[in-house]
Length: 475
Image (cartoon, rainbow, N blue to C red; front, side, top):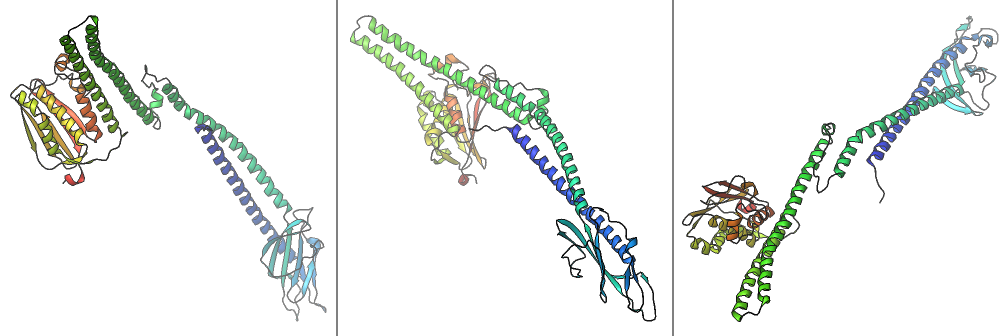
Protein backbone atom coordinates (compact mmCIF):
# COMPACT_ATOMS: atom_id res chain seq x y z
CA UNK A 1 0.00 0.00 0.00
CA UNK A 2 1.31 3.42 -0.95
CA UNK A 3 2.12 5.46 2.16
CA UNK A 4 0.76 8.98 2.55
CA UNK A 5 2.32 11.82 4.46
CA UNK A 6 0.50 14.76 6.01
CA UNK A 7 3.71 16.75 5.76
CA UNK A 8 4.00 16.05 2.02
CA UNK A 9 0.37 16.97 1.50
CA UNK A 10 0.77 20.25 3.36
CA UNK A 11 3.91 21.10 1.41
CA UNK A 12 2.17 20.26 -1.86
CA UNK A 13 -0.81 22.43 -0.93
CA UNK A 14 1.45 25.33 0.01
CA UNK A 15 3.51 25.02 -3.19
CA UNK A 16 0.40 24.79 -5.39
CA UNK A 17 -1.33 27.69 -3.68
CA UNK A 18 1.76 29.89 -3.91
CA UNK A 19 2.32 28.86 -7.52
CA UNK A 20 -1.27 29.79 -8.36
CA UNK A 21 -0.80 33.08 -6.52
CA UNK A 22 2.42 33.78 -8.45
CA UNK A 23 0.71 32.92 -11.74
CA UNK A 24 -2.23 35.14 -10.85
CA UNK A 25 0.11 38.03 -10.00
CA UNK A 26 1.99 37.50 -13.26
CA UNK A 27 -1.17 37.53 -15.37
CA UNK A 28 -2.61 40.49 -13.48
CA UNK A 29 0.68 42.40 -13.72
CA UNK A 30 1.06 41.74 -17.43
CA UNK A 31 -2.56 42.65 -18.09
CA UNK A 32 -2.30 45.86 -16.07
CA UNK A 33 1.04 46.83 -17.67
CA UNK A 34 -0.27 46.19 -21.16
CA UNK A 35 -3.42 48.18 -20.48
CA UNK A 36 -1.48 51.14 -19.10
CA UNK A 37 0.99 51.07 -22.00
CA UNK A 38 -1.88 50.93 -24.49
CA UNK A 39 -3.49 53.92 -22.80
CA UNK A 40 -0.18 55.77 -22.94
CA UNK A 41 0.28 54.77 -26.59
CA UNK A 42 -3.23 55.90 -27.47
CA UNK A 43 -2.68 59.24 -25.74
CA UNK A 44 0.60 59.72 -27.63
CA UNK A 45 -1.00 58.78 -30.95
CA UNK A 46 -3.85 61.23 -30.30
CA UNK A 47 -1.33 64.00 -29.64
CA UNK A 48 0.75 63.17 -32.70
CA UNK A 49 -2.39 62.94 -34.86
CA UNK A 50 -3.27 66.49 -33.76
CA UNK A 51 0.29 67.51 -34.63
CA UNK A 52 -0.21 66.09 -38.12
CA UNK A 53 -3.48 68.04 -38.42
CA UNK A 54 -1.65 71.24 -37.45
CA UNK A 55 0.78 70.79 -40.36
CA UNK A 56 -1.97 70.78 -42.97
CA UNK A 57 -2.34 74.23 -44.64
CA UNK A 58 -5.32 75.17 -46.78
CA UNK A 59 -4.98 78.02 -49.35
CA UNK A 60 -7.70 79.51 -51.48
CA UNK A 61 -6.19 79.74 -54.96
CA UNK A 62 -7.29 78.95 -58.46
CA UNK A 63 -7.05 75.19 -57.85
CA UNK A 64 -8.22 75.18 -54.20
CA UNK A 65 -5.27 73.02 -53.07
CA UNK A 66 -4.47 71.90 -49.54
CA UNK A 67 -0.79 71.72 -48.65
CA UNK A 68 1.04 69.64 -46.05
CA UNK A 69 4.29 70.83 -44.55
CA UNK A 70 6.16 67.67 -43.42
CA UNK A 71 9.34 69.51 -42.48
CA UNK A 72 7.98 70.18 -39.02
CA UNK A 73 6.71 66.63 -38.46
CA UNK A 74 7.95 65.36 -35.04
CA UNK A 75 10.09 62.20 -35.09
CA UNK A 76 8.48 58.81 -34.32
CA UNK A 77 8.73 57.25 -30.88
CA UNK A 78 10.40 54.17 -32.36
CA UNK A 79 13.05 55.38 -34.82
CA UNK A 80 13.61 51.87 -36.20
CA UNK A 81 9.91 51.52 -37.00
CA UNK A 82 8.50 55.00 -37.77
CA UNK A 83 4.85 55.91 -37.49
CA UNK A 84 2.58 56.13 -40.51
CA UNK A 85 -0.37 58.43 -41.19
CA UNK A 86 -2.88 59.42 -43.81
CA UNK A 87 -5.04 62.56 -44.09
CA UNK A 88 -8.12 63.06 -46.17
CA UNK A 89 -11.25 65.16 -46.40
CA UNK A 90 -14.73 64.15 -47.25
CA UNK A 91 -14.82 66.62 -50.16
CA UNK A 92 -11.26 66.50 -51.51
CA UNK A 93 -10.42 62.88 -50.73
CA UNK A 94 -6.88 61.76 -49.78
CA UNK A 95 -4.61 64.73 -49.11
CA UNK A 96 -1.39 63.17 -47.90
CA UNK A 97 -0.04 59.79 -46.85
CA UNK A 98 3.31 58.93 -45.30
CA UNK A 99 5.88 57.15 -47.39
CA UNK A 100 5.98 54.11 -45.04
CA UNK A 101 2.25 53.52 -45.20
CA UNK A 102 1.70 49.71 -44.95
CA UNK A 103 1.16 48.16 -48.37
CA UNK A 104 -2.36 46.92 -48.99
CA UNK A 105 -3.91 48.92 -46.13
CA UNK A 106 -6.81 51.02 -47.35
CA UNK A 107 -7.66 54.42 -45.91
CA UNK A 108 -11.22 54.15 -44.64
CA UNK A 109 -13.42 55.81 -42.07
CA UNK A 110 -15.20 52.53 -41.33
CA UNK A 111 -14.36 50.74 -38.08
CA UNK A 112 -13.60 51.61 -34.48
CA UNK A 113 -11.47 54.51 -33.33
CA UNK A 114 -8.66 52.17 -32.11
CA UNK A 115 -7.68 48.80 -33.53
CA UNK A 116 -4.74 46.41 -33.76
CA UNK A 117 -3.39 44.73 -36.85
CA UNK A 118 -0.14 43.36 -38.33
CA UNK A 119 1.58 44.14 -41.60
CA UNK A 120 4.76 42.45 -42.78
CA UNK A 121 5.00 40.81 -39.33
CA UNK A 122 5.01 44.21 -37.65
CA UNK A 123 2.21 44.76 -35.12
CA UNK A 124 0.50 48.16 -35.36
CA UNK A 125 -1.91 50.18 -33.28
CA UNK A 126 -4.30 52.29 -35.35
CA UNK A 127 -6.19 55.50 -34.54
CA UNK A 128 -8.96 57.21 -36.52
CA UNK A 129 -9.66 60.90 -35.88
CA UNK A 130 -12.64 62.46 -37.65
CA UNK A 131 -13.85 66.03 -38.33
CA UNK A 132 -10.69 67.81 -37.27
CA UNK A 133 -10.70 71.46 -38.46
CA UNK A 134 -7.86 72.82 -40.61
CA UNK A 135 -5.96 75.10 -38.28
CA UNK A 136 -3.69 76.82 -40.86
CA UNK A 137 -5.75 78.28 -43.69
CA UNK A 138 -6.08 81.39 -45.88
CA UNK A 139 -9.65 82.62 -46.10
CA UNK A 140 -11.01 84.27 -49.20
CA UNK A 141 -14.29 85.32 -50.59
CA UNK A 142 -14.97 81.88 -51.96
CA UNK A 143 -13.60 79.92 -48.94
CA UNK A 144 -15.59 76.93 -47.87
CA UNK A 145 -14.36 75.41 -44.53
CA UNK A 146 -13.29 71.75 -44.64
CA UNK A 147 -12.53 69.24 -41.86
CA UNK A 148 -9.80 66.63 -41.86
CA UNK A 149 -9.95 62.87 -41.23
CA UNK A 150 -6.73 61.34 -39.96
CA UNK A 151 -5.58 57.74 -39.62
CA UNK A 152 -2.49 57.43 -37.49
CA UNK A 153 -0.54 54.15 -37.15
CA UNK A 154 2.09 53.38 -34.53
CA UNK A 155 4.09 50.12 -34.30
CA UNK A 156 3.50 48.13 -31.10
CA UNK A 157 6.94 46.45 -31.12
CA UNK A 158 8.32 48.66 -28.38
CA UNK A 159 5.18 48.34 -26.28
CA UNK A 160 5.15 44.54 -26.60
CA UNK A 161 8.81 44.48 -25.64
CA UNK A 162 8.04 46.52 -22.54
CA UNK A 163 5.19 44.15 -21.67
CA UNK A 164 7.53 41.17 -22.01
CA UNK A 165 10.16 42.84 -19.86
CA UNK A 166 7.55 43.60 -17.22
CA UNK A 167 6.31 40.00 -17.40
CA UNK A 168 9.85 38.65 -17.00
CA UNK A 169 10.46 40.95 -14.05
CA UNK A 170 7.17 40.02 -12.37
CA UNK A 171 7.78 36.30 -13.05
CA UNK A 172 11.30 36.46 -11.63
CA UNK A 173 10.15 38.33 -8.56
CA UNK A 174 7.28 35.88 -8.09
CA UNK A 175 9.63 32.91 -8.34
CA UNK A 176 11.95 34.41 -5.73
CA UNK A 177 9.03 35.12 -3.43
CA UNK A 178 7.69 31.61 -4.13
CA UNK A 179 10.99 30.06 -3.14
CA UNK A 180 11.14 32.13 0.04
CA UNK A 181 7.52 31.29 0.87
CA UNK A 182 8.08 27.56 0.29
CA UNK A 183 11.16 27.59 2.52
CA UNK A 184 9.24 29.41 5.24
CA UNK A 185 6.35 26.96 4.80
CA UNK A 186 8.71 24.00 5.09
CA UNK A 187 10.14 25.41 8.28
CA UNK A 188 6.69 26.24 9.63
CA UNK A 189 5.24 22.83 8.78
CA UNK A 190 8.20 21.01 10.29
CA UNK A 191 8.04 23.17 13.39
CA UNK A 192 4.26 22.82 13.56
CA UNK A 193 4.33 19.03 13.25
CA UNK A 194 7.06 18.64 15.88
CA UNK A 195 4.49 18.33 18.73
CA UNK A 196 2.69 15.65 16.75
CA UNK A 197 5.98 13.80 16.37
CA UNK A 198 6.49 14.13 20.11
CA UNK A 199 3.02 12.71 20.70
CA UNK A 200 3.82 9.82 18.35
CA UNK A 201 7.06 9.11 20.20
CA UNK A 202 5.31 9.09 23.55
CA UNK A 203 2.50 6.90 22.22
CA UNK A 204 5.02 4.37 20.92
CA UNK A 205 6.42 3.97 24.44
CA UNK A 206 3.06 2.73 25.78
CA UNK A 207 3.21 -0.88 26.94
CA UNK A 208 1.62 -3.25 29.42
CA UNK A 209 4.02 -1.86 32.02
CA UNK A 210 3.61 1.80 31.05
CA UNK A 211 0.14 3.23 30.44
CA UNK A 212 1.02 6.87 31.10
CA UNK A 213 1.13 9.26 28.14
CA UNK A 214 3.81 11.77 29.10
CA UNK A 215 3.46 14.93 27.02
CA UNK A 216 5.09 18.30 27.55
CA UNK A 217 3.28 21.39 28.77
CA UNK A 218 3.94 23.09 25.42
CA UNK A 219 2.03 20.34 23.63
CA UNK A 220 -0.89 20.57 26.05
CA UNK A 221 -1.13 24.29 25.36
CA UNK A 222 -1.84 23.65 21.68
CA UNK A 223 -5.59 23.90 21.05
CA UNK A 224 -5.51 21.32 18.26
CA UNK A 225 -3.49 18.65 20.09
CA UNK A 226 -4.67 19.09 23.67
CA UNK A 227 -8.04 17.35 23.00
CA UNK A 228 -6.21 14.55 21.17
CA UNK A 229 -3.73 14.07 24.03
CA UNK A 230 -6.55 14.09 26.60
CA UNK A 231 -8.59 11.62 24.52
CA UNK A 232 -5.57 9.32 24.15
CA UNK A 233 -4.91 9.46 27.89
CA UNK A 234 -8.55 8.68 28.62
CA UNK A 235 -8.43 5.78 26.19
CA UNK A 236 -5.20 4.49 27.76
CA UNK A 237 -6.74 4.75 31.22
CA UNK A 238 -9.69 2.66 30.08
CA UNK A 239 -7.42 0.17 28.36
CA UNK A 240 -5.29 -0.11 31.47
CA UNK A 241 -8.38 -0.68 33.58
CA UNK A 242 -9.63 -3.30 31.13
CA UNK A 243 -6.20 -4.94 30.98
CA UNK A 244 -5.93 -5.07 34.76
CA UNK A 245 -9.49 -6.35 34.99
CA UNK A 246 -8.84 -9.10 32.47
CA UNK A 247 -5.59 -10.01 34.19
CA UNK A 248 -7.29 -10.14 37.59
CA UNK A 249 -10.16 -12.10 36.05
CA UNK A 250 -7.78 -14.73 34.70
CA UNK A 251 -5.98 -14.95 38.05
CA UNK A 252 -9.20 -15.14 40.04
CA UNK A 253 -10.77 -17.62 37.65
CA UNK A 254 -7.68 -19.80 37.85
CA UNK A 255 -7.82 -19.59 41.63
CA UNK A 256 -11.53 -20.45 41.72
CA UNK A 257 -11.03 -23.35 39.34
CA UNK A 258 -8.00 -24.59 41.24
CA UNK A 259 -9.91 -25.23 44.47
CA UNK A 260 -12.57 -27.67 43.16
CA UNK A 261 -10.07 -29.31 40.82
CA UNK A 262 -7.61 -29.85 43.69
CA UNK A 263 -10.34 -31.26 45.94
CA UNK A 264 -11.58 -33.51 43.13
CA UNK A 265 -8.05 -34.72 42.45
CA UNK A 266 -7.40 -35.36 46.15
CA UNK A 267 -10.64 -37.34 46.51
CA UNK A 268 -9.90 -39.53 43.49
CA UNK A 269 -6.30 -40.11 44.62
CA UNK A 270 -7.49 -41.19 48.06
CA UNK A 271 -9.90 -43.66 46.45
CA UNK A 272 -7.05 -45.18 44.44
CA UNK A 273 -4.52 -45.47 47.26
CA UNK A 274 -6.01 -48.75 48.56
CA UNK A 275 -9.00 -50.98 48.00
CA UNK A 276 -12.23 -49.50 49.32
CA UNK A 277 -15.62 -50.84 50.15
CA UNK A 278 -18.53 -50.05 47.83
CA UNK A 279 -19.87 -47.58 50.37
CA UNK A 280 -16.56 -45.72 50.52
CA UNK A 281 -16.35 -45.59 46.74
CA UNK A 282 -19.88 -44.29 46.60
CA UNK A 283 -19.22 -41.59 49.20
CA UNK A 284 -16.04 -40.52 47.43
CA UNK A 285 -17.83 -40.35 44.06
CA UNK A 286 -20.63 -38.31 45.59
CA UNK A 287 -18.13 -35.81 46.97
CA UNK A 288 -16.40 -35.71 43.59
CA UNK A 289 -19.75 -35.12 41.88
CA UNK A 290 -20.43 -32.18 44.22
CA UNK A 291 -17.07 -30.67 43.29
CA UNK A 292 -17.76 -31.21 39.57
CA UNK A 293 -21.16 -29.52 39.93
CA UNK A 294 -19.55 -26.55 41.66
CA UNK A 295 -16.96 -26.43 38.91
CA UNK A 296 -19.68 -26.61 36.25
CA UNK A 297 -21.64 -23.83 37.94
CA UNK A 298 -18.56 -21.61 38.01
CA UNK A 299 -17.95 -22.19 34.30
CA UNK A 300 -21.60 -21.41 33.51
CA UNK A 301 -21.37 -18.13 35.44
CA UNK A 302 -18.17 -17.20 33.63
CA UNK A 303 -19.73 -17.94 30.23
CA UNK A 304 -22.84 -15.97 31.16
CA UNK A 305 -20.67 -13.02 32.18
CA UNK A 306 -18.75 -13.18 28.89
CA UNK A 307 -21.97 -13.22 26.85
CA UNK A 308 -23.45 -10.35 28.90
CA UNK A 309 -20.37 -8.21 28.28
CA UNK A 310 -20.53 -9.02 24.58
CA UNK A 311 -24.16 -7.85 24.48
CA UNK A 312 -23.22 -4.73 26.42
CA UNK A 313 -20.58 -3.82 23.80
CA UNK A 314 -22.88 -4.59 20.86
CA UNK A 315 -20.93 -7.64 19.70
CA UNK A 316 -24.10 -9.75 19.67
CA UNK A 317 -27.52 -8.75 18.35
CA UNK A 318 -30.81 -10.23 19.38
CA UNK A 319 -34.45 -9.77 18.41
CA UNK A 320 -36.19 -8.76 21.63
CA UNK A 321 -39.84 -8.33 22.57
CA UNK A 322 -41.18 -5.91 25.22
CA UNK A 323 -41.19 -7.34 28.74
CA UNK A 324 -43.40 -5.99 31.53
CA UNK A 325 -41.11 -5.17 34.46
CA UNK A 326 -43.79 -5.70 37.12
CA UNK A 327 -44.58 -9.19 35.85
CA UNK A 328 -40.88 -9.97 35.54
CA UNK A 329 -40.25 -8.94 39.16
CA UNK A 330 -43.23 -10.98 40.37
CA UNK A 331 -41.84 -14.06 38.64
CA UNK A 332 -38.42 -13.46 40.20
CA UNK A 333 -40.00 -13.23 43.64
CA UNK A 334 -41.62 -16.63 43.06
CA UNK A 335 -38.27 -18.11 42.07
CA UNK A 336 -36.64 -17.00 45.32
CA UNK A 337 -39.70 -17.89 47.41
CA UNK A 338 -38.02 -20.93 48.97
CA UNK A 339 -35.03 -18.88 50.17
CA UNK A 340 -37.27 -16.12 51.52
CA UNK A 341 -39.41 -18.63 53.43
CA UNK A 342 -36.38 -20.40 54.87
CA UNK A 343 -35.11 -17.09 56.25
CA UNK A 344 -38.61 -15.80 57.08
CA UNK A 345 -38.01 -12.68 54.96
CA UNK A 346 -40.92 -10.99 53.22
CA UNK A 347 -40.57 -9.23 49.86
CA UNK A 348 -42.69 -6.11 49.30
CA UNK A 349 -43.33 -5.18 45.64
CA UNK A 350 -44.70 -1.76 44.62
CA UNK A 351 -45.03 0.27 41.41
CA UNK A 352 -46.42 3.60 40.23
CA UNK A 353 -47.37 2.77 36.65
CA UNK A 354 -46.77 0.44 33.67
CA UNK A 355 -43.19 -0.04 32.53
CA UNK A 356 -41.81 -2.28 29.80
CA UNK A 357 -38.69 -2.54 27.67
CA UNK A 358 -37.34 -4.89 24.96
CA UNK A 359 -35.40 -7.59 26.78
CA UNK A 360 -34.79 -11.29 27.20
CA UNK A 361 -36.99 -12.40 30.14
CA UNK A 362 -34.26 -14.74 31.39
CA UNK A 363 -31.79 -11.87 31.56
CA UNK A 364 -34.14 -9.80 33.68
CA UNK A 365 -34.91 -12.80 35.88
CA UNK A 366 -31.20 -13.31 36.47
CA UNK A 367 -30.78 -9.65 37.44
CA UNK A 368 -33.71 -9.59 39.90
CA UNK A 369 -32.87 -13.00 41.38
CA UNK A 370 -29.21 -12.08 41.95
CA UNK A 371 -30.13 -8.86 43.70
CA UNK A 372 -32.95 -10.39 45.75
CA UNK A 373 -30.81 -13.35 46.86
CA UNK A 374 -28.01 -11.01 47.95
CA UNK A 375 -30.49 -8.82 49.83
CA UNK A 376 -31.97 -11.85 51.64
CA UNK A 377 -28.63 -13.52 52.42
CA UNK A 378 -27.30 -10.45 54.16
CA UNK A 379 -30.52 -9.43 55.93
CA UNK A 380 -31.42 -10.61 59.42
CA UNK A 381 -34.13 -13.26 59.61
CA UNK A 382 -37.64 -11.90 59.93
CA UNK A 383 -36.82 -8.63 58.09
CA UNK A 384 -38.32 -7.46 54.78
CA UNK A 385 -36.89 -6.59 51.38
CA UNK A 386 -38.53 -3.80 49.39
CA UNK A 387 -38.67 -3.93 45.58
CA UNK A 388 -40.10 -0.77 43.95
CA UNK A 389 -40.68 0.05 40.25
CA UNK A 390 -41.21 3.66 39.25
CA UNK A 391 -41.94 5.05 35.80
CA UNK A 392 -39.94 8.26 35.31
CA UNK A 393 -41.11 9.00 31.78
CA UNK A 394 -38.31 7.88 29.48
CA UNK A 395 -36.80 5.43 31.97
CA UNK A 396 -37.78 3.10 34.78
CA UNK A 397 -36.09 3.01 38.15
CA UNK A 398 -36.04 -0.28 40.07
CA UNK A 399 -34.83 -0.20 43.68
CA UNK A 400 -34.14 -3.21 45.91
CA UNK A 401 -33.67 -2.23 49.53
CA UNK A 402 -32.69 -4.45 52.44
CA UNK A 403 -32.09 -3.89 56.16
CA UNK A 404 -28.89 -5.86 56.37
CA UNK A 405 -25.49 -5.07 57.77
CA UNK A 406 -24.60 -2.80 54.83
CA UNK A 407 -21.40 -2.49 52.85
CA UNK A 408 -18.28 -0.73 54.08
CA UNK A 409 -17.40 2.49 52.28
CA UNK A 410 -14.05 1.08 51.10
CA UNK A 411 -15.80 -1.95 49.57
CA UNK A 412 -18.71 -0.08 47.96
CA UNK A 413 -16.85 1.04 44.77
CA UNK A 414 -15.77 -2.56 44.09
CA UNK A 415 -18.99 -4.54 44.62
CA UNK A 416 -19.57 -4.93 40.86
CA UNK A 417 -16.05 -6.17 40.09
CA UNK A 418 -15.58 -9.80 39.13
CA UNK A 419 -14.55 -12.16 41.94
CA UNK A 420 -14.52 -9.30 44.45
CA UNK A 421 -15.48 -10.25 48.01
CA UNK A 422 -15.66 -7.81 50.86
CA UNK A 423 -15.82 -10.83 53.23
CA UNK A 424 -14.43 -13.90 51.41
CA UNK A 425 -15.14 -16.33 54.22
CA UNK A 426 -18.81 -15.43 54.43
CA UNK A 427 -19.27 -15.46 50.67
CA UNK A 428 -17.67 -18.86 50.34
CA UNK A 429 -19.96 -20.21 53.05
CA UNK A 430 -22.96 -19.18 51.02
CA UNK A 431 -21.57 -20.85 47.91
CA UNK A 432 -20.92 -17.65 45.91
CA UNK A 433 -18.15 -16.98 43.43
CA UNK A 434 -18.14 -13.18 43.36
CA UNK A 435 -19.63 -13.07 39.85
CA UNK A 436 -23.31 -12.37 40.54
CA UNK A 437 -23.12 -8.58 40.72
CA UNK A 438 -20.64 -8.42 37.84
CA UNK A 439 -23.08 -10.34 35.63
CA UNK A 440 -25.95 -8.15 36.88
CA UNK A 441 -24.08 -4.98 35.96
CA UNK A 442 -23.12 -6.34 32.51
CA UNK A 443 -26.74 -7.32 31.76
CA UNK A 444 -28.13 -3.96 32.90
CA UNK A 445 -25.61 -2.08 30.74
CA UNK A 446 -26.39 -4.40 27.81
CA UNK A 447 -29.91 -2.90 27.78
CA UNK A 448 -28.62 0.68 27.95
CA UNK A 449 -29.18 1.03 31.69
CA UNK A 450 -27.09 1.67 34.77
CA UNK A 451 -26.82 0.23 38.26
CA UNK A 452 -25.47 1.75 41.45
CA UNK A 453 -25.19 0.68 45.07
CA UNK A 454 -26.06 2.88 48.05
CA UNK A 455 -25.27 1.56 51.50
CA UNK A 456 -24.84 2.55 55.11
CA UNK A 457 -23.12 0.15 57.49
CA UNK A 458 -25.61 -1.17 60.01
CA UNK A 459 -28.67 0.19 58.17
CA UNK A 460 -28.79 -1.73 54.90
CA UNK A 461 -28.11 -1.50 51.18
CA UNK A 462 -30.13 -0.19 48.24
CA UNK A 463 -29.48 -1.25 44.66
CA UNK A 464 -30.71 1.32 42.12
CA UNK A 465 -31.24 0.25 38.49
CA UNK A 466 -32.25 2.65 35.69
CA UNK A 467 -33.47 1.14 32.42
CA UNK A 468 -34.78 2.88 29.27
CA UNK A 469 -38.46 2.24 28.49
CA UNK A 470 -40.24 1.51 25.23
CA UNK A 471 -42.21 4.47 23.78
CA UNK A 472 -45.52 2.78 24.61
CA UNK A 473 -44.78 2.74 28.34
CA UNK A 474 -43.28 6.22 28.63
CA UNK A 475 -46.60 8.02 28.91
